[in-house]
Image 1 (cartoon, one colour):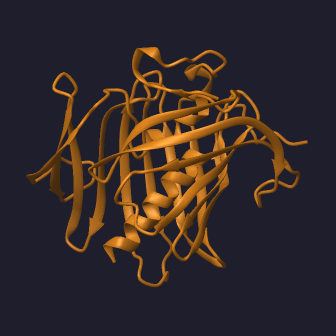
Image 2 (tube, rainbow, N blue to C red):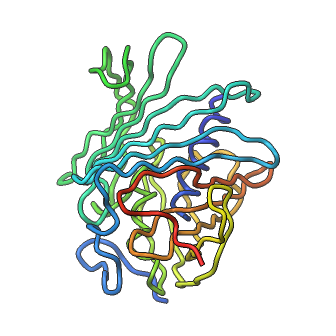
Length: 272
């Protein structure tokens, strides 16, 4: 059951993310040609996606963005989906380059909520991972338990939610970027292949084909059960670079997410 839940959440977040010379991160990261983060971040942006596997509709994910570079993702399985009853919330605090500066997650249990909190010790180059229990997802934890630590080779990294924002800066570039990634208390590396490949794609929420830019990627992050290959994503071909669609290969086939509703002032998916 836990493996199925982690597969669903991990697939969603990576598919959103998918939505030259390899660059090292930190102060040497080359941002020439990238979108300004102020163009990507829109206060009050709310994006909702449907998650599908084969012919089955598994659930939805809704991402809320604020101007102060904080965001949260609500992941919910649909009622009646076999083996899965998932309701989780993932929070992140980011800097202006969408690197993580704080994150936590909570998941609904029978008698409350269970969470993972990351205590950032950037000078010591490590993250302390704590397991929490809560009566309410927005309340203070009623208990904490140390479960481990993540060593950091670089203090510039992304987490489970900021992975959906970081590639939006680079979609109009032609380069390969590697970025350390933290998910489920594990550290790995996610590689994005940006080719500025412009095309069109169809989604159910829009009558005309949407102008998009395709991005491919791979990850070594542990804890994403059933992942067998890379991922692909399609972002809106404009200055907002909104994730439109994403696909991730897993053991049982391919998980796909697709934008279904959006609320971003002055924005609609660009069409032909």
